[in-house]
Length: 505
Image (cartoon, rainbow, N blue to C red):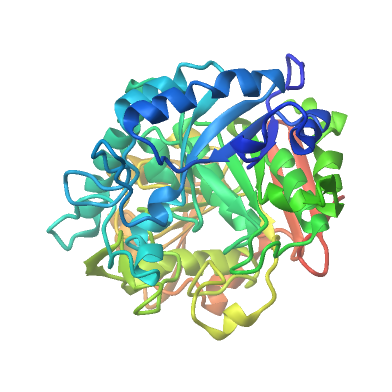
């Protein structure tokens, strides 16, 4: 591990725990490239006692290479059940739901090592909103929920129940010794619900969505709830592996550094080697990980000063529209259907990205002609952050433009927005239901622009209208560029033509 007191950014990969031993060329490569930590995929196969005994061998092997490690629990996503000889089922719970079920003795045995950073639940949000879809596809269980679902069809009731369940789940692992409980998100949703529940947001790059779009959702959650922010740079692209070039991977790693994340790691480190020797992927990783510049960043995501905010109740909608794969339901609850209210979120993004994202979805997985476009990591973005329905005024102070959308926003947050319009000059785009009564009385037709103190309200039921786009254009920055401010440092990046690299300008 790099020995630097000011270091606030750490680099890793998903090295297999079985590769970490003296004489292994891969382990030596990680040490030589100044890797800080590894994310170890793990599937329990022994009794609880046997797993505790086995995991106790890890501290010594990782310590020899100066590596910290995370236990990555993805096995429940692929196994309908995992019952060991002592009768413990590692991926089904007593409440009839399907999720990772680590025995408390195992968690304690794992986390007593100071080099263990914590426990990660890989693609947990995916399993929640798509009801363990991988099991359905592989005929190991049909549409199994991760947690018990609400009987109500109300979006907020279901969302609040999930928050309680997430907190209880995270607390279980932390109360048994885990320093951290970390998610890993395929889609740009549930970052805020996770962060509010004590689960560190961890977004995937170069995957189903634009990397930068994933970032501004996760960064808003980390900023709002004061958490770390992790980033998984994933070499998978659907069923192609590796599905991204070494160059794209390299620029995603650098973007993570620039964007103030706490830790970044590459998923797919097996592709770093050919015949045991580092190849172009390995060399690109080494070039980044050993670069002296990445050890001296003087800010984190907590110093982020967004210019554009999107506030909404996180209803889990990212563009689902396929009745089998991506079912048009919210929170994985078949009784809660997607409505036009949920779609306000994706349409706000269509505006702030100069039309580069699909108006009806935020991922290439959406079944539509838009998804036939070549995958890109980066799109136009001018200091955007997504906040949830209870964000406080102090987190919104730097905003110049704000979109209000979705099913619910708290009175406290709406009060903060009203104050920022009047006194800070904030411009707000909102449907009628979220604007104050004195503004609502002044609205006429489908679009009304109303001054209020130093700022103004744009009240419309259609953020995609020409009038709306014209009114907010000055806030959106330049097409083909990304711009972010951290503390007193503003960074502008010009995106390459293929959308997979950038240059700082």
